[in-house]
Image (cartoon, rainbow, N blue to C red; front, side):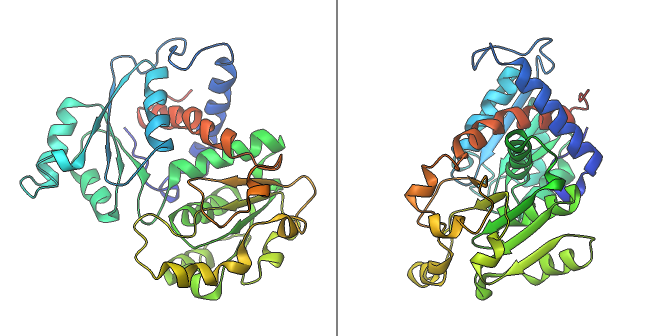
Length: 309
């Protein structure tokens, strides 16, 4: 049994195995419909329990299809319907019930501490579907998408991030270190990664640079990543924050500083950080990026159950 909470907890070898398995499984599904089960039904009889404390569309749909295609089932719990959220039951007791009824638990949460506490008491694997500090399933899937499109290891590519320093960027930074790819971060000075992340970068062999000029950050980029500037439950002066990011909007003029065959990726939902002409252009691969979550999350589930080939 293995957990999937942060990319930093997992070896580069195992992360690469997950991507390799996802590629193989995607190739084998070319003639299958969404609900047809993979040959061998590797997770037949397994139940994935999901709980979403924050809004979700892509993570919810992709994990639902992932476990279904592996031959298992899923049950989604609403936190507002549980004794846990109403203060009547502890995480310890909730975790023991989940362990008795299900075979894996996927949690999308507003608390990193809650993830760790569930991990402490669960006797089944826990998967981080998003937390305040990281979004590991998203970024591992994004590495898969980049390599699929570019047809080469991500270590040979120049990756750029334009936007806020948030949980998605934190996981991208970890991926840069794990997969050894060049990462240029472009953000306003006030919105740079926090001290803990900066120290993590400093203390690990890396190819990461941070710029307060978006043109420098995208220069020579093979891939440009972005995310919504105003994140879920972002308790800030939204008008003021958007003004700080005005010069960081991803438009055709900014894209011209990247390589001619540069692609654009966005984990969605989108906001004003990207121009419609870029988002709807041939450079944008956001829809492939979204559907690839299914394939990678299948391999993450198999990793957690110790069934990766």
